[in-house]
Length: 89
Image 1 (tube, rainbow, N blue to C red):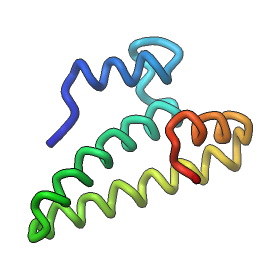
Image 2: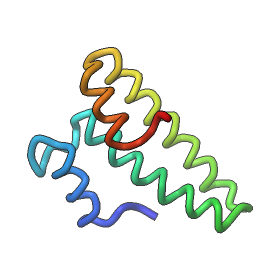
Image 3: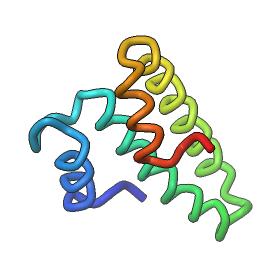
């Protein structure tokens, strides 16, 4: 269920400062968003898979904490990332 190396590399290249910049908050949030999208589709097709549903909730909470950190430290970057990923409507 994990992201492929190619997909991860493309997300890191798009949101990071270089191809090895996986620790930056923008990159982590973007990667979590991609995993959340995949798990959401999985949970729609397999509604009785409770362990995947719990994993999805854990990822959403982790992304929420990272977004709160980014909002506190870099408000302009937070707003740009939210708009780019289409998270808040």
